[in-house]
Image (cartoon, rainbow over all chains, first blue to last red; front, top):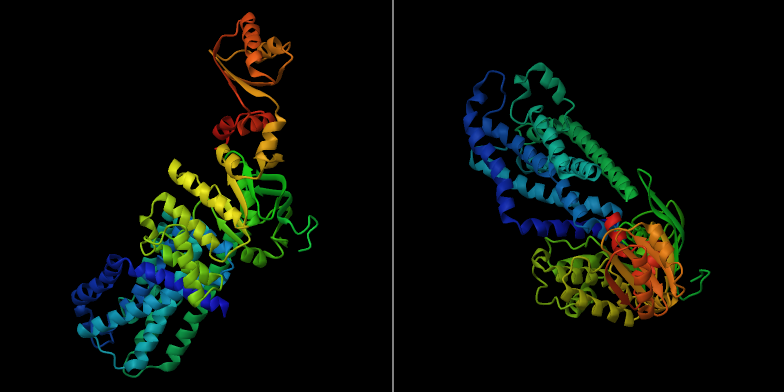
Amino acid sequence: MIALTHSYFMALRLLRQLLRQPWWIALTLAQPVIWLVFYGQLFKGVANLPGFQATSYITFLTPGIVTMSALFSSGWSGMGILRDLDFGVMDRFLVSPVSRVAIIAGRLLHLAFTTVVQSSILITLGFVLGARYPGGIGGIVVLIGCAVLVGVSFGALSNALALTMRKMESVIGAVNFILLPMTFLSSILMANTLMPPWIRKVSLVNPVNWAVEAGRTAISGSPDWTAVLIRVACITTFALGCGWVATRAFRSYQRSA
Amino acid sequence: MNNSQGAGTAIETLDLVKTYPGNVRALDGISFSVQAGTIFGLLGPNGAGKSTTIKILTTLSRPDSGLARVGGYDVLRDAERVRLSIGCVAQKSGVDMESTGRENLTLQGQLYGIRGSELKRRVGELLDRFFLSEAADLVARTYSGGMQRKLDIAIGLIHQPQVLFLDEPTTGLDPESRADLWEEIARLSKDGLTILLTTHYLEEADRLAERLAIVDRGKVVVEGTPEGLKAELRGDSVEIDFAESPDESVVQQSLERIEILRDVVVNGPVMHARADHGASAVPLMLSALETCGVKVASVKVARPTLDDVYLRHTGRTFRQAEGGNS
């Protein structure tokens, strides 16, 4: 209970910090919008390729970009921890009786919230651009839920990286190294029926791909709920694993003091 | 409270040892105790082990061996209770620069379980007390160094702790803010708070600490009141600058015969000594040095300072230690 309350207070702090940087919000939103508008238009014809099963490319692309944005904005979450380490804010928290779990969980809660807002904006924009969601509200909720799970997972990993490396340059390098392959080795931009076989195989074990596939299926006309459920279960397990890794990294940070 | 030193002891350390990776021995058996309601100073150059001591006492770091108690609670076994009874102002600050002063204080209060109108009242009081009310709703990034430090202290006091740790509180402040903060710290102590202050400013320790321990290379080399430590030295300090670094043994030999002279220490082109009566020792010293052909550039005679106490117990001046260790 204390851990939950403390996580909430910690998340509020981060949210207030975010709201003080309207330019940052605009920039983080601009990127997915560019993908949806420009990339969506440029590759419109892909939907006509034989074997591409979606009705239109924008309908196909929107859940992909929703997931990708969750991945990218949470991937940088560790930078915030680095700043707290540098400014002594982390030590100030550790000297206080704050629940240790809340220091990480607060960040993840904050990420979950921002992912919900970001996803809702992108889903709306996708609709304006012509994407359709026959799966209805239920499907959209599942899609957002999957994006949140991706955000929380990679947010936790990013925090773990920051707590382990403790150097901004190293964290930037590592995060960059992870994010793009995660994107390209999934069906975010291209249907898996049209992928080269080796990428299709790799994408089977890519948690980002599980989330995109589950979200995309959920918003389709006649979703295969068993497939959705299996993937949601997988990505949930992955998220829990990432949370565990972050907790371990945090403990080893504490021990090194 | 059930510690051996009685109810009046707020902080107690015994033989604390801490070694960092790479065999850096930060603490080499540090022991001291602090009376409740007093200001205790840990004085030493950078790297002497002061911050490590504070980290252990505030539960941030674990000692390799030894005992540390705060408010009667063991910092390892009762970390949670220790945390509730202490406030800490770390050297590195702890202010969240992207939040306002009020938000910083409010969050800290929430983490200690203070809520609602009680929290509002505490935050308001502290903002007033540290003259931060006007800037309360500006982000801390815009504060001056002095204001940030005050906010740091206010954050440390939100839950009315019994013990406050101040790690180098005035480092990096301009002289005016420093004097300002000294007054504030003295006032806090009058309210009954126990304060452990670390500093590498001799003047600060002299002004604020009721008792102090001089720390060098992870050990307490001497402990006492600033007055007592200075009085132990008896007599004046004599400092001579040479025109060029002389042969140490020559200087020692030439001065040996002057009976009123003690504690002769030669460090390169400077020498320090003590004399019951500085004014009568100087002519004797000058003539003895001249006979040996040692050229003197300048002579200074002064009442003993903490610097002399430091020199007496560590064999180097404070300034040399700072230069060598930082």
